[in-house]
Image (cartoon, rainbow, N blue to C red; front, side, top):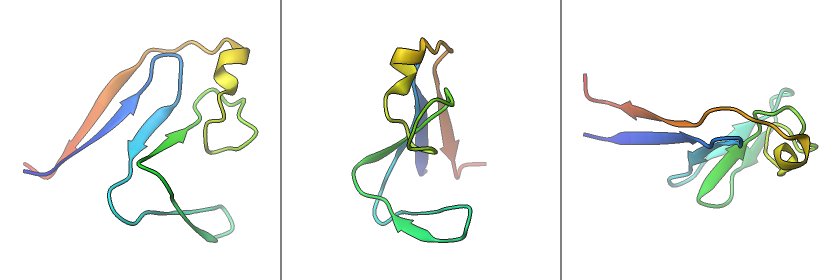
Length: 75
């Protein structure tokens, strides 16, 4: 059984683990390689580097619940 966990940090970004080669595609269709072990996506709307988190949620006072989303290939 393969599982993939996405972590939604309380008062922070969405963390998506990167396993192997990953590419994100921008609105214009340009492909960009992802570097690192995870990607942090903004959910406060204040990041100057959208869709990625730049830590702006701290200064903005963003508050929201956290949690974990588990995706599985098991039916």
